[in-house]
Image (cartoon, rainbow, N blue to C red; front, top):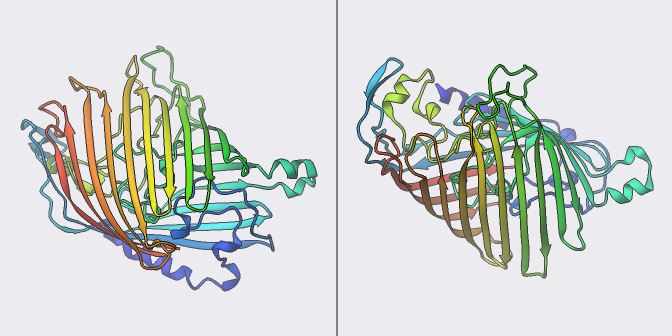
Length: 458
């Protein structure tokens, strides 16, 4: 049962509070760092501002814990289709009945280590999540903002604008991944769930940043292995498009943007980015989340759940409410983002287009996503409360469907930071599925209701 992992996860976080003081560090003692609390909101790439003096090795142990209560209800108009799935037989287009209740709490564990002046390490683990209820290492990376061991004044001057990030970590495609919920860490997200088409993957590679504080211009170039799970095994599969044995070339990313506080009231950020991989073992840009969606069990089927080798419906459909276009072999995606904050009013917009295919397809398909968030934080100065609205829509060509499909979502939220580390928020969501064939469980599909969420991050 999944719940057996929740108590150990909480005990693990609690036990960390007894680590000797010599191994602790406040946020202000870690250089070029994004706090895991309210202070980290609207932080994208970490700043090059050198405001923390290095006084020796520092270790900060942190955590994130989130629990939700949902009142969601789902329905559809799909034609009944009776099939046998594993040992279960029934209508695979029936919707699982839902009731009000708590969902599995999620917990994260963070280690941030200041190794040297301008060099820090991050290691993140999921202690308990919906999709991986046991403990999993998410990844780790080394961030280099200085190169003191080279003892070169010329290099020191270059590094005032350059940052290297090396390891297994979130690929920096688009800006939305800086605002999304990630397992037990939901403190940066003014809403409960992420986008319908959720762009998130951890891959092994290197990102190189150039940031000019004076002009606000920044650029990033990156190369990764293009895989969530690295492999050294040669492929035995044939690419249907080329007719050749599949190959695993690297993936390439890039980003250009402008981000500047124009005056005390107004900040403007605009960016454009891309992610491209021509062939992969299993590209997961739109399915790399190992924690699962925040809308539990919506648009699920009890027969399929009973017939799966996994234990519960939340396992078989861990990403319920999301849309994955299935670009596992080839993926070329582009995103533009606009963020504007004027006093307590924030706007965050996304326009995205993607093309890709599976290894059995001979041509690419397309998907488009648009989203707009409006958030008002108040009162002035503290901004401990907020009210927000999001509209999110996805349209795409999918395998086996006679026409392009569309998924629309509207969500409104209210939130309260009781302290910089403790947050509560409530969201009402309405999501609808359009143009799915009559034999697809998502035909005429929709769900709506309230989700309440409480979070602690430190």
